[in-house]
Amino acid sequence: MGKNLCLVLGNGFSIDLIKQAKLEKEIDVVNLFSKGAEIPWPETGQAGYLSFKHCPNLWNLGARPNMGKDDAMALLENIITCLNVHILNNKPRVPDGSAKPNDIYINAYYELTSYLRTLFSYYNSLVPDGSLTQKLDGWAWLDFLKRANESEIYESISIITYNYDTWLERLLIENDISFKLSQVEGGNNGESPKITLIKPHGSISFYHKNQSLAEYEIGYGKDIPGEATTDDFETKYDIPLSKCLVNALVPPAGDTERIKQSWSGQIRTSAAGCAKKLKSGDELMICGISYWHVDRSEIDELITCCSPEVNTFMFNPYPNVAMDAVLTSLFKNYVYHDDSSVLNKRLML
Image 1: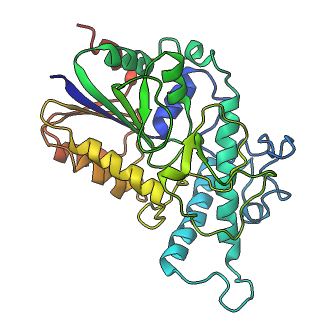
Image 2 (image 1 turned 180 degrees about the vertical axis):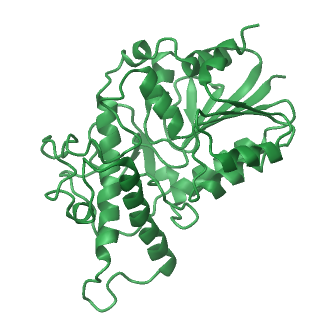
Image 3 (image 1 turned 30 degrees about the horizontal axis):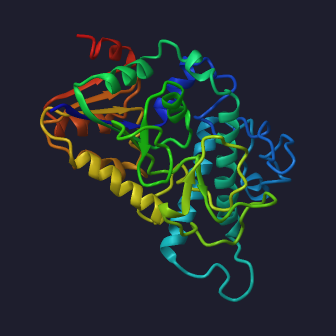
């Protein structure tokens, strides 16, 4: 019987992909506001999504296309921290019928989630079908996944990704690699595929079945965060600039313990179930995970599910020091790599 392989992928995986494809000038997944002036407003197709016209609350809080990445992340964290506390507070937004002075942060959250979905949908449109594999010719991760899927060494491959983009799914489809998408309808282009894809923080490919909009709008005032289960979504990889009222995304700095969205909780449970299956001799590969304070408990949930005998690998040129220490303390077979090129030598015997 073959091994079980589990990949846990963070933003660093997408950064590596973008670098390999030579798309750094067009796509920025580190500073999420830097391309905001280029992003089209879905209703008109005209550039300028990140503007006072379309996102007045984000704008008034200082969101600008020319702001630095550290300032951009600090603003994101402030907005989501306010949301996290607002949810914990669990009080009506307008208890006496008058606007509350701090609603700018909550309204900025509505703008942010809609903006992020449109941002990543726009990035997705920059690379047409058929050219993605060509741009990633020789990329170590793609070549490894091809070999792993074909090899009898692995019985199952679980890919837990916290990225919103669909680069990985598109690569699998373009290369005729069958996979199934955990919990959400769609994504299976073959019978009993070896690969299962799990996206606990959502995806631009998740479309709510009943909340498409005739005209694009930002859903101010809807319930935070908007209750929906995985049964309410379907998967579409032919992604237009989205016109969905419900955005199945957990934003950066979002605390999934507080933002208790049913769909995310269901997928998170599925991810933990994959980790629990890992036993002695199986493999856990972690790539590009930040281990930031807001997502630390979620990562801890995964790695503490695994047997300490699991062969564990981390790929990251700039690893989080705390995460390196934690993996060292948990797994006796832990190996660190600062570059993914070492994958070229795996499964070659």
